[in-house]
Length: 175
Image 1 (spheres, rainbow, N blue to C red):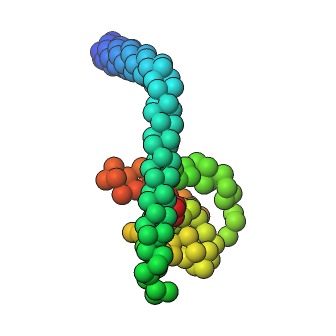
Image 2 (cartoon, rainbow, N blue to C red):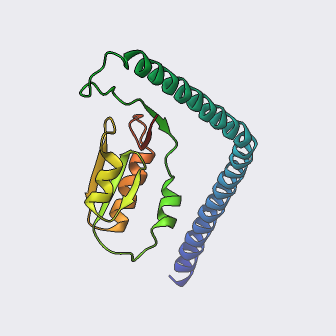
């Protein structure tokens, strides 16, 4: 009986060892794949940065064109417009602050109750409703939320920043 128990324990130990070896092999393969992907991302990063810079230049050109158009329309209407006929403002989108930069701007333990602006002049976290309202007043499709803690506020901002629906965090500037 003693021999049978030793054989059973030896078989069990051998099976556990084989399972561990298999897991280590899988982990090694996944680690190699992660390293390969990291190298690939680093290689593509300059192109992504360049395309973002080109997009920013295009947005700036569009803003300049929109401003010139608004000024031309205002000049054309100057003789016929009354004080009540203010032209609608022209708005353009800019790049909002990242969640990581926002977390660094508002360190942990800086109080409770936060107002999160996700679509506005300057998206971010604000301490008072007046500060948040100042960032949203007049902005098209403005969006703000009240959260009870800094953690909840940052989580909400990050979830909207990474939204796949295209309606995430948006910074709008009047031109």
